[in-house]
Length: 554
Image (cartoon, rainbow, N blue to C red; front, side, top):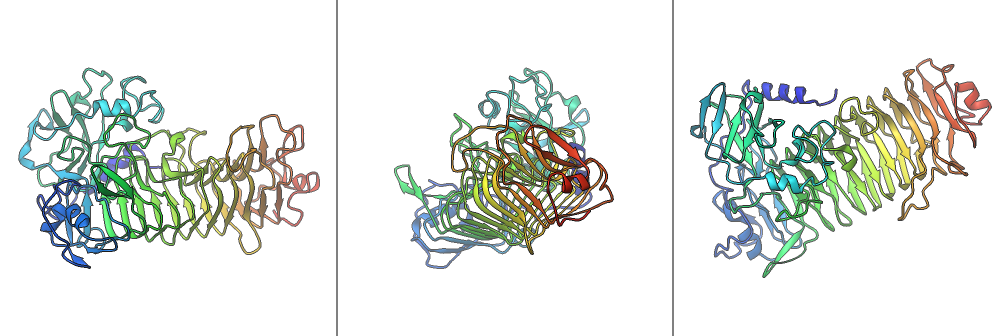
């Protein structure tokens, strides 16, 4: 089922019945920021990091040579500042959750800071950074958030634009905004599981009694700016200089609740980006990146690997590219992302990989994201997608038939192979090839299982788009859909769809040896472009008149 505002509140309600994080370890991570300049020397290699050292971990990282292993202690470390590693550094925790190493960009708000007022609880102490200007810069044209999530009008920031977030017992609370930009936080809108912030009055209004709960708030780093990142791909070189830090390893960590903005944000210092940003040779294993405002993992650089990693409940998306020569799998999970209602067009949902390649994505799950599951765009090329599961990804906003909801979306890309995946229950198309060429879906021993998707099972589309890059000129030629097992619902479709001027735009595209279950063989569910007219036909006509699936079965 799609994750709606209502279902998110249900999650919050469940958390009130006794789910709680470990008791916070006070200020242990409160000042772990680059530039704190604690006078330290490198304790050796590996470094057994104590709880007290976590407050100034960057100082130890800077003092140690490249290739140092930092063994991080168990605990919940709040307001944990950005780490700029040195080439080859390794950061090894003990796993996420109770008894693990949990790094938070948020800080705990004491219960004593809250007072009851007319059915809501008010904190007049902890708002120290006004993010209204940041939100406005993040969305200058009013398109970042999903349609319908601009309660103050299209020229004012929307729900998705505010990077600071409030959490209750580790569960995501929903922000509300009033319709009047001059009064953005009327208490009458705040109900259980929701909050709003009046930046002018520097007050937080919460609709749930905080007594007996852990309330955490992400935003201010303590230095008058957003705390956006946990691990950057760069090394501090002195005098404000940075250089790439390749071959860094992160293992057995949770990274959560950072107030990162969109990567395209102008005027924010520092500029936005993913909470964890990789470069060449990075290794992530058994890492949880969750509940951050923007993108969770930035997959940049070459020859990186991500395995046994969970990207979940992030505000915009679990991952973002471009990325090349990377390996994503096995056992990664990308679920329930786009919790802050971003516009899917800009990569919200599980995420988007653009303009790069090659990559191998295998044995991983992409499910229940508000948007698409696995999405390639803008001349992505030479990808292998095999042995994954894509289920329950939804179009967003609800009922939107144009944005999101594909299990696998290949858009203006090329030379991609998709085999042995299970793609089911997505809102729109299971596997959607949009203005893409030389894509192979299935094959001998490589059948995909595709069923129960709302608008189609496997479709090849041509919309006459233009573009430049590795995959230009754009077409829908030479796509091969081979030996896949599809279960039809009677409202979905299979085949080739053309809705623009087309001169040979789908030449070489063939369906071969696919099987179709569901008992809809006589329905007009098979689509084909005959060179001049878009056709909708039954399965026998699909075979006899257009030569598709000559050995296929229905």
